[in-house]
Image (cartoon, rainbow, N blue to C red; front, side, top):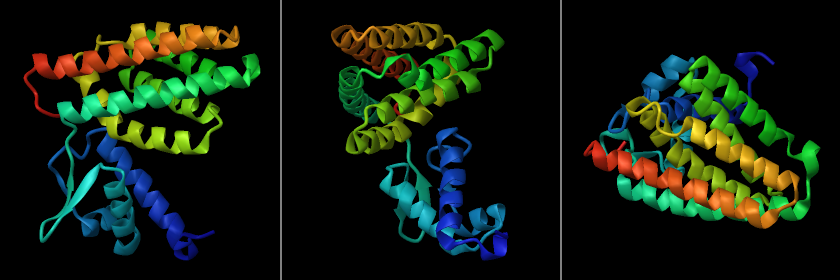
Length: 227
């Protein structure tokens, strides 16, 4: 289908993905005002799908509309990080419980294994962007494999709010947690493969709580109010 006849909904989805990627990877830094006209020109489309995409991003908690000024990219404060990690930990622990109960076996757990391999390869190459992408793929697969649509949707929404904080943190302190995260993820997959639900839940709860403390601690040490 040619761009001229592409449905508006598809254009909105394309604009949403493009702008969200720029926000989550800090190409559009906190405090930046996003113009629907400029984004439409950059993406080569009309302003309507871009405006609708920005409305979706506002519902995600990534931007906020300000009267007469436009749409501003929101920061992620220490309080936000703490709140989001608490919610994510609860959601992901529930996902681990559901996965353990489903008894997926090695084949069913393949998306988690593949993400671990991608993380390992990225670490060997020293490419932090690829490590971050693989780590994100692991957590999204965890939510998806829960088999619970409502849990998955809630979890993915919260993960979008925290992803930029991870991206920035890796640049502030690259050695922060990559290898520890990989080891914890592999241990979780092993516990799930052994159908040891209690160990899997305990491992994941400790890992997520530790990751949250690390990121909050980093903000404190650097005296940053927000990312």
